[in-house]
Image (cartoon, rainbow, N blue to C red; front, side):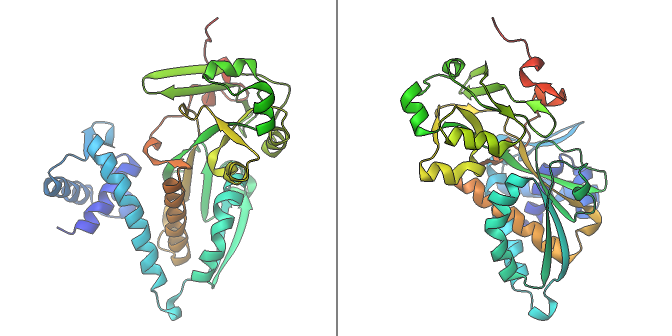
Length: 333
């Protein structure tokens, strides 16, 4: 058995959710994927995938194995690229489109290192919010938050859920008190973000073990300009819910202090990597995809991304369209 290839087939089968889609992406037969994954399971003495008529999903053992294999494959692929002789170094123009927060907090800190590895690749970096934006059209690679509707000719890889935190400035907590339970947030000034789909995220959901709590929050400010809300929170004017990935520098500097750390904030959007299937053989696309995967695995190791949540469905409020998230559920009186 080619164990490395078997691991690759297993990872792709999980990412695609079926053997058939994995076979199309790998450009092999369905039988080849099924056989090699089955052989891998026999060698490990464990069932890695649950099979049903809708596709495949990892078992508990498969999820543990997946978390170990993904970073190894990404690092191996990148190592192979870096050993490519300079005469064969990939080059040309690469169009990359990403959400503004992912541009500033994920890509830009890492792109100088990518340029050092592949100096002949010229990057045209664009900020977009969704697949339908004008600058997303024609992009070779997209890195997007949320639940994008990928065109049928695109490979779509969900890389993990963005880990969210409830935060405020230290002065605000000192004046108003730190919440001990999610329900305490109803007594606080909560500043709200309206996402690119036009949904005001005024429903914050928490889990802790078997407990699940939804809290409808409100405050004096809401905006689709995330940075405006962030500035107000740093200024001590309220509480907000932000992604850990995009606020880590403020937390480390002490400008923001998370609360309710013993609860997990739900509804964080997945981070998605998308690229045209026809472009997978293009060297500059291939090396960038490998590099992006490695960057996300590093974020996972630092706790900013929850890889085990990649299969989570989008919240009910996200499917409503423009309006308030709280309108999607019946809140207790």
